[in-house]
Image (tube, rainbow, N blue to C red; front, side, top):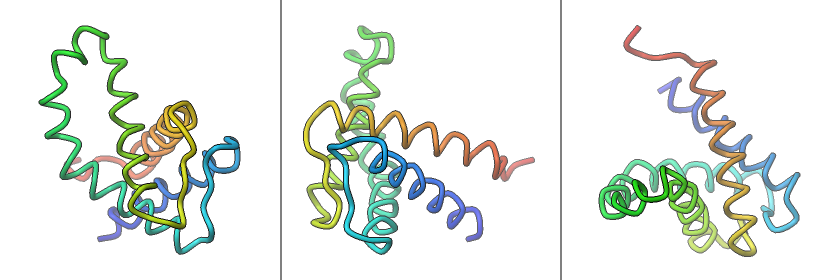
Amino acid sequence: MTRFLARLIFAALGLALAAYLLPGVSYNGLFDLLIAALLLGVMNAILRPVLFVLTLPLTIVTLGLFLLVLNAAMIGLVAWMLPGFTVDGFWPGIMAAIITGLASWIGGVVIGDAKR
């Protein structure tokens, strides 16, 4: 449970950093930010693997760059579902996906692997 909460906080920090740096990404408050991070985690756990398999040929052709579009789509879906979190357009979504992905990666390095 502690690892889950830590990952949730790192995802929320990534979304907050994206909202701070990018003019097309915004949230209304801390509660909306945490709900957005939670929804993003659920979407990445349930929907993203299915979409990854369906778009695998396109991902291979683009040498993995389509994964950025897939991550941006997950963030856009969260913004569509949650009125307090907005992403205005494709490029802010791509940049938010990069920033959030980097923050989550750093969080994974800091938290460590549970199997070790």
